[in-house]
Length: 266
Ligand SMILES: [Zn+2]
Image (tube, rainbow, N blue to C red):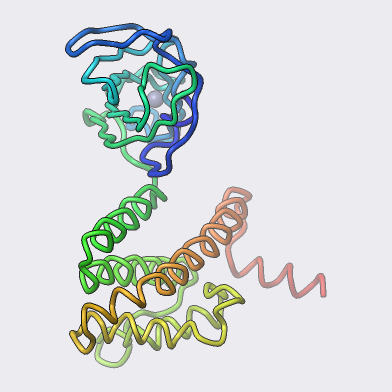
């Protein structure tokens, strides 16, 4: 359970060890639970550095109904003890008080109280947009679902372009057309997964067509799944690259040096 909470907002359901001692936590009733500490990384303002914030050993649980509880946690910077607040709404299909309920985080919010900030690009942001796309798709809103996919694709491509120093503006400071930028970023950083290499741009073109209303809702719904797979594949690819880039940054190597080192090695 503490793992799941530490990774919020994660939309997938996870089976956890029973945490309510097999007894229903009735509406409005409180219970202290011991599910291990919750850890989250933030940029701590007093420390002016990235720090892990941890909860105490016990968390507070409030009963809603047979299938949902709310959990409150206060987290402290492990270095300077600055505290922030986090709140989770946890739901399950089966009874949540069961022996090993499958639970998911229905809602997560945090109040960082001006003591801390979220770190850089939060992968949860993408998880949230993916969830929105999925909700729109489930409601059969094809164009709506597609807007979120394109939004993710564009923000991640601009993000990579900025890291890689690929210009996003062209003549007269105008924005480079997105398709051109995508091609340029892909040439340098290979963000389109191999399995889409032949039709990645075509799928992107279809995303655009749908958003610009050149396609029916029915077509949009049909194309949602392959477009979603493309976008997820790109996010995955970039996450891999980001981890690499971050590790190298921490070693104090600029990207120019990386090229040199790579050149020397070959
Ligand atoms: Zn601190």
